[in-house]
Image (cartoon, rainbow, N blue to C red; front, side, top):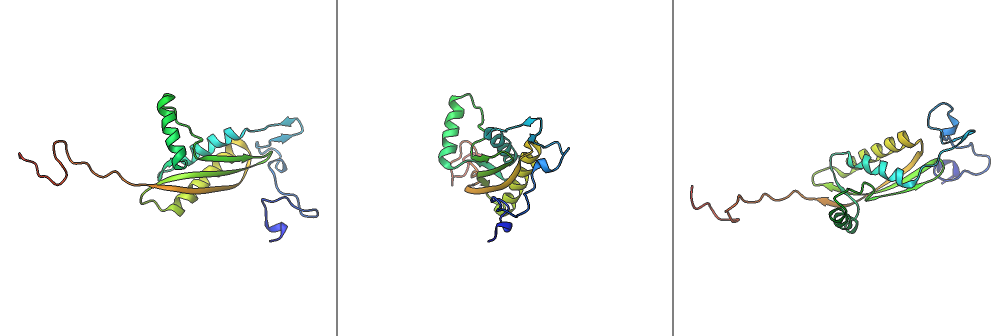
Length: 165
C-alpha cells in the first residue's frame, strides 16, 4: 500500500496535505484557530458515540459480558444511572477521533446492516457536535439478545392443562 492510499496514516514529504477542519474557513467546526484552540476530552466523544449508537433499533446493549455485568451492579448501587460510555472506547487527537464500540444486538437483526447504521450515526453525531473528523468506527458484536420465552399464565405449569375452564 502506498502512502497516498492510506488516508488515516501520516503522509510523507511531497504528498498533498490532508484536509482538516481548519482548511474550510467559516465552517463553524474549526478547533484550531488563530485566536485559540478548542480541545475535546475523550469522555465527551465517548458519550456522544454511546448515545448515537443506542438510538438505533436493534442495539440491545453495549459492552462485553463482564462490562455489562459490572454496569448492572453499578446501576443498582449507584441509583440506576446508565453509563452511556459503556462499550465505547475512543482515541481523540487534535483534529481526529477513532471509535471502538462493543454491541449486543437483538435476535433477527441483520448485523451488517445494523453495523453500517451505527457507524453512520456515530460519525454524523461526533463530527457534527465536536468538529472532529472521525477516521474510523470499529464495531464488535459480542452477543445476540434472544427473545424471552413466553411464560405460562399464573397457576399453569408448562405442559399442564388448566383444571377448571
